[in-house]
Amino acid sequence: MGFVVAIANHKGGVGKTTSAINLGTLLALTGRKTLILDLDLQGNATSGLGVRKEDKPGLAGLLLDNASLADVACPCYCDDLFVLPLGRRSSAIEEEIRSQPLLMEKLETIFDQIAAAWDYVLLDCPPAFGILPNAALRQANYTCIPVQCEFFSIEGLTAMLKRLQELQTSGSRTPRTGVVLTMYTSSDEHSSQVMAEVQRHFSPLLHKAVIPRDPVLSQSTALGIPAVIQAPESRGVRAYLELAWEILNHEKQEAR
Image (tube, rainbow, N blue to C red):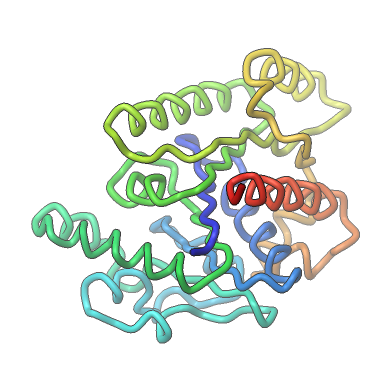
């Protein structure tokens, strides 16, 4: 089975999709067959990888139309990188699951099939605790929580950790968890204060890698090209490379 990483935070705009795209590309470039599963209705991970999301069956096609996994995963940029969008019927997924409870069992089976088919699966979760992100969190081996270096993001981190505790209480397997600071500006006192606050309260969970505020990261997403490919020497990419190595080490620890 592949190693499943959920990239999640209850708060939007903290760098989840940017992290999924660049981590996924880096892992694929190491020769690991990698899938980015885009669970957000906006489909930004899909478009950020240069794939048109409007005409793809995606995860909705697997769940609602019995499409084949081989037909819905879209290759992009390098031999071992794929993205799976929610698909053109994405808006119907959660409503269909609520009306047909057996679809939840099918969704979990699909997640198992996906984990078996790839070495790494990165789940780009939406900024909400709905049916899909909860199911994704239950499947993950590791949850990475991006936290933007501004004070409201600390509230989002607290809510996310509380949700993981609730999943554990309900009997679901709770993945190991890490926190990564994003959009950090060393010259900004506010950023430094937030970093110090997160270090003070969440130090055991904190990744060493810190993702800087780098225009290259946002520009590359808008162009539909991973920054890893567009600007491999940029500060942001170097930080994501450090984070990728930390994730790989967590996989090794999980395998012991």
